[in-house]
View 1: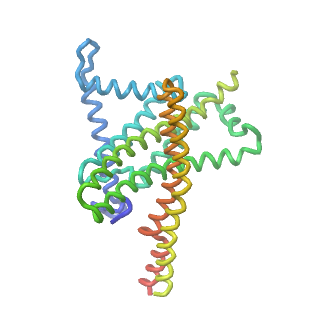
View 2: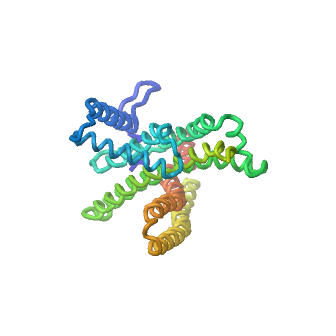
View 3: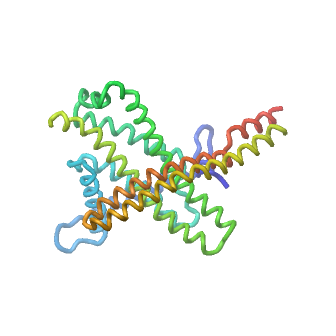
Amino acid sequence: MHLSSDELVLWQHGFFKLNATILTTWVLMFILVAGAKLITRNLGDEIHISRWQSLLEIIVSTIRKQIEEVGLPHADKYQPFLGTLFLFIALSNLCTIFPVYEPPTGSLSTTAALSLCVFIAVPLFGIAESGWRAFLQSYLKPTVIMLPFNIVGELSRTLALAIRLFGNMMSGAMIIAILLVVTPFIFPVVMTLLGLLTGMVQAYIFTILATVYIAAATRARQELED
Amino acid sequence: MESMTLIAIASIITAGLTIAIGGIGPALGEGKAVATALSSLAQQPDAAVTITRTLFVGLAMIESIAIYCFVVSMILIFANPFWNHVIAQVAGK
C-alpha cells in the first residue's frame, strides 16, 4: 500500500521522473482541452443546439451563477481561473469510478500546486481590482496589530486548502483499500459511491473557498468607495 | 533494534490516539452544524439554497480538522520520518 500515486514511477531517466500523478494529470488536461475544443468547434445559436453544447452551457452558466452568488459581481474576469480549478478537480475526482485509476488530487504535490495558484492569484486579482495601496492597506485592517495575523492567516489557509483536498481524496482511496481486505464484497462499492460524493463536494469547496478569498481581496476598493 | 521497536510502539499508539481524540471535536461540531441548519431549514424553506451552500462549506471546513488528524496518523504509519531515519542509519552501518 502506498500513500500517493507519486510513488508509482513509470519511467525514469536521470533527473526526470514520470510518475503516475504526472501522467494522469496530463491525460485529464488533454481530455478537458480536447473535449472543449471539439464541442466549441461548431457552436450554434438557433433553437436546436447539439446536446454537447447544451451540456457545456449548463456547466459554464452554473459556475458563473455560483461565482456571482458568493460575492464577485463581475464573474467574467474570474471565471476562467475558478472554472478551470473546478473542472480539473471535479473531473479528476469523478474518474475514480474507473478501476485502476488513481486521482492526481490524492497526491500532495498536485493539491499544493493548485493551492499555490490560488495563493498567487488572490493578490494579483486584488491589486488589479483595487490598486497597490488599497490592497496593502487591507492587511492593516482592523488595526496595525493584526498585520502578522493577517499574513499568517494567508499562509495557513493556503496550507489548509492543499491538505484538505489531499486528505479527503487520499482517505477515500485508503479506506477502500482497507475495506477490500476486511469486507471484500459489497461494502467497498458503497464507500466508492460516498467517495464520489465527497470528491464533488471537495471540488466545489475548493472553488468556493478560492472565490471567497478573491472576493475578500477585491473588496478593499469597494470599502474605500463606501 | 531497541530504538526501532520503541519508535514503532510510539508511532502506532500515537496514530491511534491522534485519530481517536481528533475525531471527537469535529464530530460534535458537525452534529451541531447540521442540527442548526436543519432547524433553520424548517423555519425558512425559501432560503434552502443559501443555507445548504453555507452548510456544505462549513462542514468541509470543520471536517478538515479531522482530515488533518487523519493525515498525521497516516504519515505516522506509512511514511514515518523517524522510522526511515533509523532504517537509513542501520543500513549505513
